[in-house]
Amino acid sequence: MVGLILAGVLAGCGNAQTSSDKTSGSDTSKKTEATLSGSVTAAGSTALQPLAEEAANEIQGTNPDLTVTVQGGGSGTGVNQVASGAVNIGNSDVPSADKLEDKSMADKLVDTKVAGIAFAMVVNKDVKVDSLTEKQIQDIYSGKVKNWKEVGGNDEKINVINRPASSGTRATFESTLMKDAKIDDSLGTAQDSNGAVEQSVNSTPGSISYLAMSYLVGDKKDALKVLNINNVEPTTENIVAKKYPFWSYEYMITNGEPKDAVKGFIDYVSGDDFADTVKKMGYIPMSDLK
Image 1 (tube, rainbow, N blue to C red):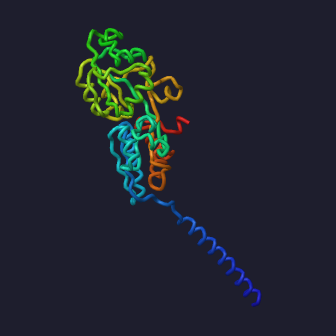
Image 2: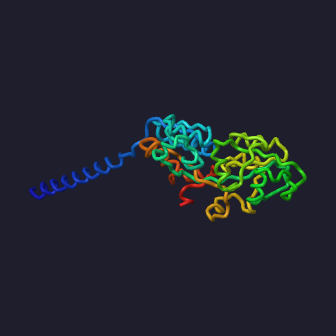
Image 3: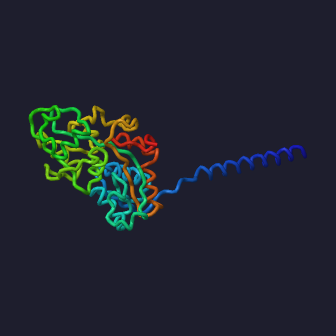
């Protein structure tokens, strides 16, 4: 009898220990990561805008208390709006110093690289040229070359389509391709967005312009004729191998170090969980550029 009682007590202790272990494990499994909340506003680069909008949609899906609003306006607009406090994030194709009007703010702004982006020279589909050298591009935009036959094409006038001074895409074009050559702004017209460039190039015979490769994905893949530069295609592989010159980082710029929801959003855009989407949308993940 005594032996049976002792066996029951020991069994009860063992069951109690097992029950305690299960409870502890259950508590651990219930722990969840903190979600983001609040409001984030971003404005600027129209080249970065589609990626920022897609990131906003995705991150809000898993963070119901978070609101992210993304607008365009150009890199210069984004940089100067974040400097003035009008938005939380300034989206830009170039470092903030290149577009900042109030130079006293230079030390306060923080530039975070979130992706890379290729840009391309594009022409109307009637243009019989497949590649241009950097020198030929410089000569076209400086007004030295005005007919396609001068660069291997048909006898047809070159209609130049440019971007406005506030455009980060134009700033990248100037720094990577034009270099010391000066653009003749009296040539042709200027368009302030990728969509406007597409429409203008498609409707203007003999036209040439430049835009972000991220625009030429999905149903826009064949919207325009894309030229090689120095016979090199605008691909991620060629950019990583330093063979293709016309590309830049995309920046999200903040007034001071990003914190809370703003930091969470920027980290999401540049992070591994979003990298596949970055590639699908025609951008280059930071993991490929490190």
